[in-house]
Structure formats: C-alpha cells, structure tokens
Amino acid sequence: MATGSLETQYTPEDLLLMPDGHRYDLIDGQLKERHMGAEASSIAMAIYLLIGPHIRSRGLGRPFNSECGYQIFGAAGNNVRFPDGSFIARGKLPDDRAPRGHVRIAPDWVLEVVSPNDLAEELEQKIEEYLQVGVRLIWVVFPVTRRIMVYRRGGQVSRLTPADQLSGEDVIPDFVCRVEEVFAGI
Image (cartoon, rainbow, N blue to C red):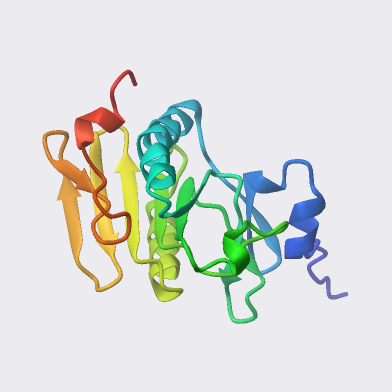
C-alpha cells in the first residue's frame, strides 16, 4: 500500500488569517518557522530606531518591521518571506500606502538578524531570493561577532566591523551610523 504525503498545504491568505502567521515564512505551501530570539529582536529594534526617524523625517518612503510579509517569491509568487526589517522607497507603493495584506513588490532594503537556530544554507537562500527579486541593499547582522555583511544588487559584498560606518548608500540616502551603535546596550 502506497502512502502519500498528507502535509497541509498553506496559501499566503492562510498566513493572513493565522494569529501568529508572521512567525512563519511560507515556502512551497509549507510553513517554515522563523527563528528570531530576544537578542535578534532587540538588535532589529535598535536598527529600526536608528533608521526609522531618518526615513520618516526625509519622506523617503515606508519602513516596516518583522511582521510585514512579502509575497514576491517562487515561480507563482505564492511564497512569503518576513524579513526582520525592510524599507520601500516613496513612489513605489500605490498612493504610497501600505497594503492591507502582504506586500507584492520588492523592498529596496532588507534587514536580517542571525539568530542561534538559523541555518547558514537557509540564510544564503534568503539572500539569493532577495537579490533575485530586486532588493537593492541587504544588511545581515551577526550578533555573536558584532559584524554586519552588506549585500548589494550588483553583487558587491562588504563585511563591516564595529568600528566601521554602516550606510544606507543610495537606497536610504544620507543615513550613516557606526556599526557599534547597532549593538549599543545589547
């Protein structure tokens, strides 16, 4: 007797109906739990508090926290990823308003903070997917080493230490801070 897989297949709309849907990425119909611990959450919030006022005071666009899903991945566009932070430049969203459900355009900037249970292969896959859909700037924060890897759409990658400057480059113009500010108080 042959047995088939009885795994439940989920849709992006299912995530929106789940009270904890933002805790999962949706990959090929399967829920993939996001591993964001307290330290990673604290670092993501520190970055948000540094970058958010800069974005808002200059009218650059919309920053989003880790509960914002992007339905732009996969062949049918039915995979959903929830980065730890993101930004969409002014003029890209219809009427510059956040949609009620998942965002269906690529963000300009993405933040990922590595948590203890994150796997290198999965992180690498996320970065590749972000670049493939047109994300222009990605910051990957490594709390243990207090380093930040910066990935750019053109393929250039930088490794920053606490003494280095972190820049929004041309994606979040005029934003700069020292990497050590990201980890202050952590």
